[in-house]
Length: 401
Image: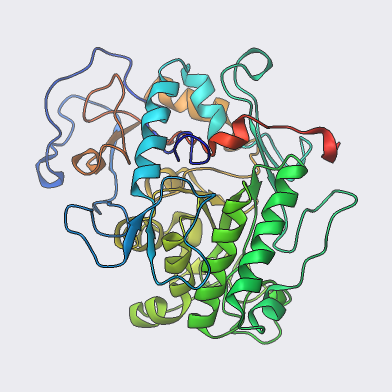
């Protein structure tokens, strides 16, 4: 967001942008995109869903909606005001556009891909960019929903289900705040929580991480937790998107859910998380109606980014990326990064132009899909992600070493 605590820069899909001269031709509507005439590349249309921020634009004011420019200063606990982070996101995107101008193709690819399982000091790591991190200092992504993992002298905070059982907004917010401060104190940029799956399967081994089986309670607990964590200075990550309701066969089972049930029960906590300005969301291991969560265009693009107006980035759960189709179905970061989806593979695809992507996303908000020096029908496979400004100023503290 903006100075003193918003997002530095987010989601600039210019990784594989054409290196030819800019084309001034306006973006065609999705239905007007012509097929490639002489191209031998594969034409892969980006999702048809348009994206806009939650809540409705300020040009049509909604009672009780207040602009928030700094996530470290959210509305007070118990307030009926709805925070609108649109100004903060707009500032973040503008900084992103300015920052990306000095990045090479390889550097852009590096920012969207982890360095491999535990190949750094954190459970997930984005490498520094430039000599000694002069262009971008990198990111540390660390578990867990109960506090800092892989560190000493850390606090084991109460479980999610116990926290929600208090029905006390003030306590839930304060838990999130002190959790966020501790993550920052340990040099963490992205805290991989809170978890907000409903716990449909009683034997689910990780149900205790979530806030219980009531979608309203889970949504309110997630809302207060995220406001608290990001007020403490760390990025929160809403997980696991979605229907990740059992551990047994979690990477192979398909959760078959109708649209009404999805919205009223399983997706509601994610909606409240987005209303709280959550920075990131993690897609899950399981399949949803036969499609892997991290490849699911309906979930990531249609519901989360279009309908709910999510302005942040979606990362994969660790090794939950199954194919490159994810890059056009809503996935923004692959974790932890492996031999299949490392940045050099992405760069090679971009340079050889093996896949031609005709994007119709540019017809919407420029702040979401900004076009750099490229044709409106620009080549790209990954969106560039950049995050919280105050973290950049205090990255990589030595406490976790």
